[in-house]
Image 1 (cartoon, rainbow, N blue to C red):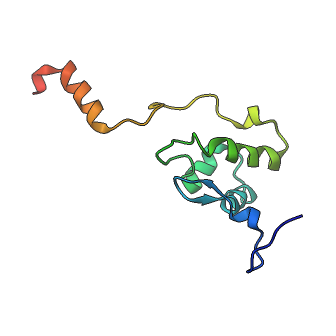
Image 2: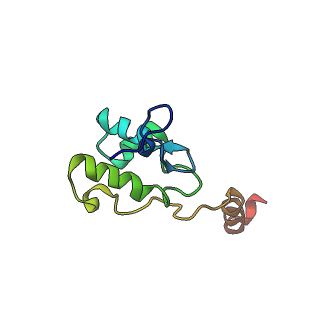
Length: 106
């Protein structure tokens, strides 16, 4: 059973899966319908997973939509690792580390 809004749209499609980039389930399902088969393809199309949390919040939600759509296990959909930086850091921290290791640049 689907619950409809006043405008007749399915409420489940308006659910936001990626809060950082404000990406709805409807948009993710649209990407899947248009042929996106991987997390990376959806990421390129929508920027989902590219916000401040780097996919920590939405990664599993989007993977579950891919898993359901293509009938594959979640383990086959999820990418095994994150690319660095694993934890968001400020650029100043990188600059400070570079300066400390290369003192002649100061």
